Length: 514
Image (cartoon, rainbow, N blue to C red; front, side):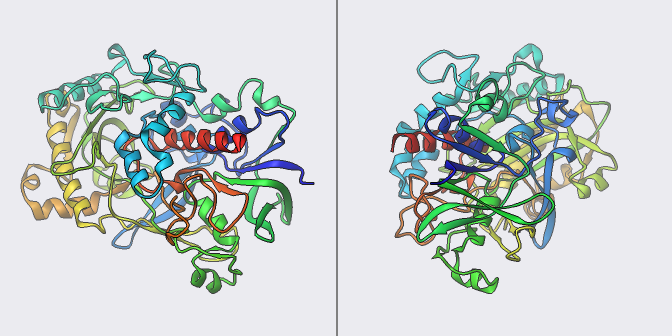
């Protein structure tokens, strides 16, 4: 008899959700294995964490590298605290749209249409601003929108510039039909304190449940099998050595980079790649590690005239969501004004700006068509996978971002915004009307939104590029599931963390009612 009914592997959004929901059944024994130290942002949070948006968080992130474009490599951070990227992201709480989930359904996953998904968003939400049949109340995730009197002067000017540019205004970005500019919904109960899944899902009496065990600093190497059935995982011990941990059902929720890496080390993936590394092939699935989606971003920046105008926590207070010209993909662009952008992880921009911070307007492409990949470089679990983002491989992505960079320039030149900068950083009036120069600028300035997805995407078993079923069961392996951004068949035009939490809620419901 296995020691646990459920083994949940992961440190973040979906993993904490699953551990909490599955352990609500007192008859089921649940083990949460997380690679992080167990330190949470509720205990002496760093400035980067309380800001909920600063891009440099050295103590709170794993720093791997990724090839972004033309051989250029960038630091590719992922959260490592309990709560993982939900603890260190900009705390945005944006749902995906009905159109996003229509795409999922059309790709062979009808159980993920909007009418099936909406109730699981509502289940996780405690919306502090709206009490109606669209939003959720009483869930573990507090959602609060910034108030007009809390906006920094720059953010207020950005809002006014968007209105003047003709964009509509919305007071609720989580309404299914919302588009335009308005206050950013955030995972927090007050302006100063960000939220994480460990606070909402594992806080209070949950952590003391007799049937829930949490092990930190537990690095999972691979899944263990008995025949075709997952029966546990192999874990690297502190100080060396390995240990097998038995469980009746294994759920990987370690993120879009780590979950597929565990599958590959377990013998599930492209057969030729596995044989090259000396890994015995259990299931030949070409989609494991393929179809990597990430959100490319560019922007228009200026050297700050003075200290940032906002208080800590005000990096992203307003959001402009819109559809790119000529696009059929609803809300496929987001714009943010950032008035305290730390350049510690952007050495090229830091050199050009000749300073440690910039302010400006950033555009994020929410629905890129380009796809990358992750590939194991060694069978050794200590060797990180090779990450290739492959940005701008699709010509249409470059078209979207060139137009977006021009919009960023227009918005950063608006009254009330432009006065906060001494000089532009690279992009100037002499460039914005030149198509060739703008394409060069986008290629040089492009960066990652750091929301990887799609590396173990859902789809029918007959689809060789699919890794899990629409119920998130790994094809070719019994009692093995994945619930994190890796299963997304396309990117949502909201925040990846909120949708990952929803994935955890949905899988927990299916497992408990099976």
